[in-house]
Length: 346
View 1 (tube, helix red, strand yellow):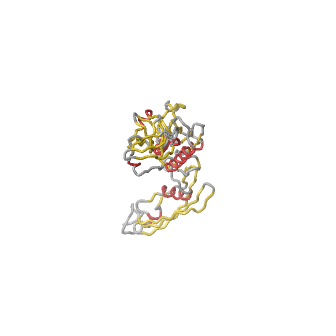
View 2 (cartoon, helix red, strand yellow):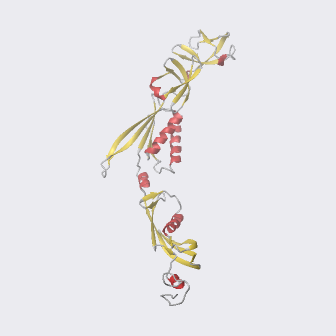
View 3 (cartoon, helix red, strand yellow):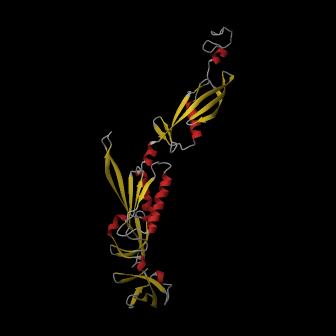
């Protein structure tokens, strides 16, 4: 067999030419002379096929990945070893070299390619929103029929910031624009409605409380004609706190714990725990505060009753002995609360 290009006799032809003539014009790699990469100058996000991808990696690694993504290896190449090198950085342009060693038709080959990677710095839509103070939701923290305490406000701030920090890796709009501080409480301006919902759930887990959403029309999308809304989420911490006293139905009780959906109470008359759903929140009345608890002493004890002095008028009051009081003796101090002229042990 004769090579159509050089005329030499050969045992094997590739596209009617010998292997030596074939390899003269063969290139193991195909790579553009110039590669352009669009990078967000704030978060290092990368624009690929019209979509921003959060990669959050160093610039050098972005360049290496751009080279890898643009290298096309010929199907005839086998056992390839490729080395990538950034030769020089000139501002936003990286001069790069690609070296390949491989086998083609049992011939060991080595080639070098030069290219440049140009970094175009811009701002992705998410960072643009963040820098402009964009927000989708306002969480209004309030207390029902009372003022919030400093501890409650501090706890709420900590929950908001911690939750946003945990969410940020998956939601780049999970950021806090500002905290407004009217006298009624705190208003949290949050970039993402989705993250705002999760924050409110965390607040409810910690404080208990009632959530109400109110969408407000702010403008209209000119391209679609649809309304653009912001959401105001009202989160109201209960009017009562743990250890306060309430009346629910025919029960006088002390609050023992407040959960996201239920309130655990102790019936002061029966000394039995029971729960109230937040669905019945409006049927709960506050009848006493923790700070109204008083101390008095046992002056007499029988198998079924103890006698104490009313701290207000020093009248003798008989109370049923509960299991908690069986170990108490005369002159021991007990805690009491006076509600609707009735004294209860607490």
